[in-house]
Image (cartoon, rainbow, N blue to C red; front, top):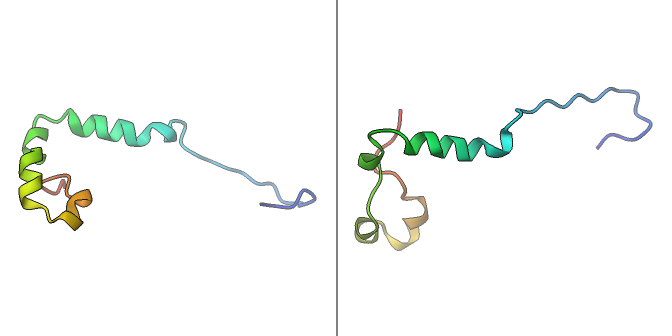
Length: 64
């Protein structure tokens, strides 16, 4: 976004594997022994979640 004749050095830093961060986090979450207790079955999801809120209803419990 800087002009080509800008006299300022622009330094960009970013994590090396940032494009895989969501995949790695999901993989770590799924590897927990208690993961099955955090998730809900499809039938339970259909029963309990209102149709407008289904997309945000993923985990039963909050992870701290």
